[in-house]
Image (cartoon, rainbow over all chains, first blue to last red; front, top):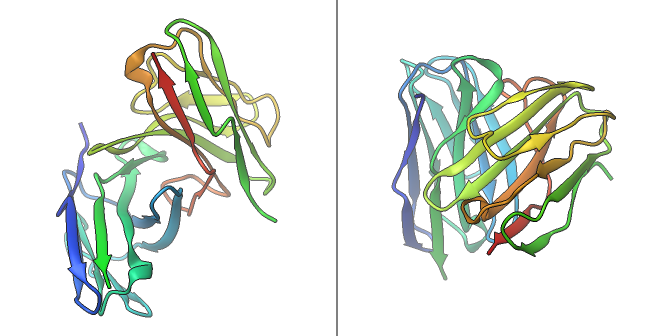
Length: 112
Length: 114
């Protein structure tokens, strides 16, 4: 079945270091969404990318959608302790937009 | 305040005892979904609903039921819970199909089945 994998599963950085998580789909995606889940919290929508090769920025966060629309990345510049959490990518199921397939997630820990 | 609410937030139950987790949204969203979250597996969609009385299976529907009798409510029913349904459950809603629009998630329900 359709799978969306993320690497790494876990990363521990010092505050100020950069961080990147990669998302790889087994199928081509029409779009990709990114969510952040703080410890003990619920997923919160960050952004959606639609076009091949698209790059979007939100302050220190840079999101990319691959040319083949099968992969994506989230890069955080100069991490802060507020960036702690698990980051998930998600894409529409290949059967239609009613279903969403989430990636396995990358847990980020930031030490001060 | 726009929100998705779930109840209860925590539940410990025994195998076979029927339970219902309620979900309600105040944003007049058409689309609602239930997910379960397990370590290393991310979030997996259990059921979704496109409108009142319209529901369909997600990726892991076995052992669950849903209903959508009102637009704002989307309860999740476990008729005979088993230990492998111990998980963290999230309800979510969106204005448009989930694959094309942001979802708003509830706070989660942590369920333990012994």
